[in-house]
Amino acid sequence: MTAGALVIVLGDQLDLQAAAFDGFDPAHDTVFMAEVPQESTHVWSTQPRIAMFLAAMRHFAQALREAGRPLHYVRLDDDGNRGTLAAELQAAIARLQPERLVMTAPGDWRVYQALREVAAAAGLPLDVRDDRHFYATVREFAAHARGRRSLRLEYWYRELRQRHQVLMAPDGVQPAGGAWNFDAANREAFGSAGPPLDATRLAFEPDALTRQVLALVRQRFAEHAGQLDSFAWPVNRAQALQALAHFIAHRLPHFGRWQDAMWPGEPWLFHSQISAALNLKLLNPREVVAAAEAAWHAGDAPLPAVEGFIRQVLGWREYVRGIYWTRMPGYLQHNALGATHDLPAWYWTGDTDMACLRDAIVQTLQHGYAHHIQRLMVTGLYALLHGVQPQQVHAWYLAVYVDAVEWVELPNTLGMSQFADGGLMGSKPYVATGRYIERMSSGSLCARCRFRPGERVGEQACPFTTLYWDFLGRHEALLAGNRRMAMQLKNLRRLDDVQRQAIAERAHAVRQPGFASPHR
Image (cartoon, rainbow, N blue to C red; front, side, top):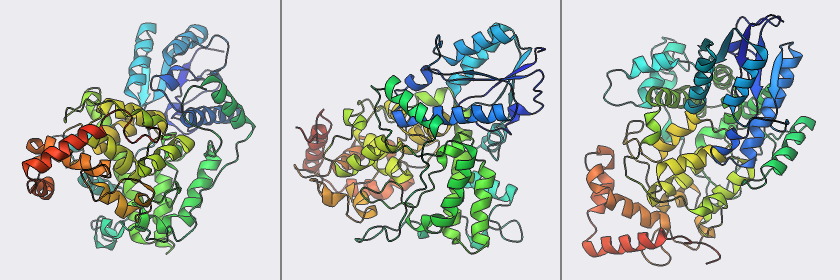
């Protein structure tokens, strides 16, 4: 075989139509893929996340072989596995002697820098091509951001809606339905009876290839947190399409109304559960958006639900990617609130008396999944109020979720959840008392908890409520100029010095190791 291109495919680039394959010549070119321990240990990834990537990669390798594309594939359990992507790529270059390297733009700054260094050391050109699994390029986002004093999702979202004519009125200028978003219609709780409809997810029984991966992960990563008994994620293109179709038909019509609702023991509800398939590139966002918009046109789903879902894909997904690639590597170091506390150890076990946190963390470890309100307003909110160093929060989120790739996870964590970028990404810190969780779970979570969301001091005070008032007090000066925090700070100023001191003392107790442990 005459030396040609070595096409690098990473674990989140599982698309036969990716830009890296443009002009691929099976007579000369070879695909490079590698499973390496480093990608499961640079953050201490949970078993569901590791299994998701490995199972999807092995199924994609199978698809490459069936497509007749020569493949150099390194398995995790191969003898002599060199441990890192860089080392395996170096070995592949030495063996295959390619003329050049080709890849689709990666989703992780660390990986990108490592591969660039390998290419430079080998004296090979590295052709990095745009990732077509996004509506906009990073260059287009950079042009949008240039000269703006602040970045906000809404403006980018509207620009993309107009440019790609998604959910637009016949004039192509105004939004369908006369509004750009329908948040007011999308914030209902379930009520005391709980979810009124069955929201069971579409589960995929692991095939022989996936079962091999599950066995390998259980054996190789036995010390890592998480469970694999319920692993049923889509791990190939055909399954991802099935998952999308199932969501559009059965859950999208109800998604908008209840997208912020929570209920104990109900991890799936009306969310799509396709983010992992999207982020591994088993689905293209254009087909996802088109399917949702078609459901609205057909009268199968209401506009508020469809718009709310499309905003997550066409709006938020594009926005966080732009933030990541225009702000790295410095973005990773942000800590605008000066948070220094360690992540509580029970984030890795769910072993806490706080019912909402226990529910969200246990399901996260069981399934590698939690919906966006559990991430933002339960696990994320507690870490923010507690004052956890944001880099530790980032490492946890990147480690535990099956859909976590750094380009999407890092801005969501440091910017949206922890306000560590000081407001670059979002206009205010998302802080609330335990009353928010009580309201959005219709009291169901708080009824199972020994703490009381309406109390801010005392042994029964909800830690969220205590830490909320403590947070406002600690950051009052920093937040004073934020108009969106004016009402919350006004309420804070109604507290006298004695009340503030009691809150500070209770907050100190809440932050102690072992607090709210059922074994204490």
